[in-house]
Length: 117
Length: 110
Image (cartoon, rainbow over all chains, first blue to last red; front, side, top):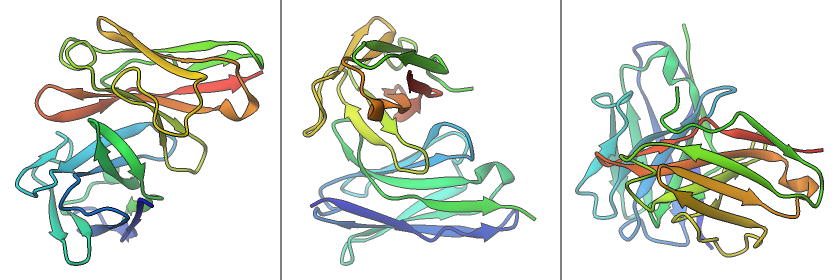
């Protein structure tokens, strides 16, 4: 059974950094890409980033390009999203989602990030 | 401002059909058959109900159907039921290796 568990959210000051984790079970991250999608309070969904299954290419939305990066630990089947230079507008619930057929298949439960002084 | 345009709200009575539109451009909806639709209940993660414009994931009722014409995709929910009341988002792969969402439509079952 495919399952994603995202974690690592919290409260951080503007300009700070935070790392989110997405732990996968029921499938291998070496065979499936992972997206991150966020949702600001009371707002819609926004695609944030995507890493290919082979880990060789990463894609980022314009609002986070240059500030967010990926890492993976295939032995633990975990993908991490590293976020630096955080802004108030990065405040959102962050979801990881399994890529399949050019979209977001299974989703994690979401982890909240609050950027505030 | 979202890249894809959806009506903010839609409604229908139980048993009726409702269609939700999603308008983009030739760089996203019109250029690729990679349109998906997601259902989201308050406080919950989204769930995909349509992928590749018309396909339904396993377990999604056939009351949910998708279509596309030009730069506009549509989700139709037939035989409306109370638990169809939720927010619905369209999404498309877009030129430049990115994905874009619509602003979401709140579906109310009267």
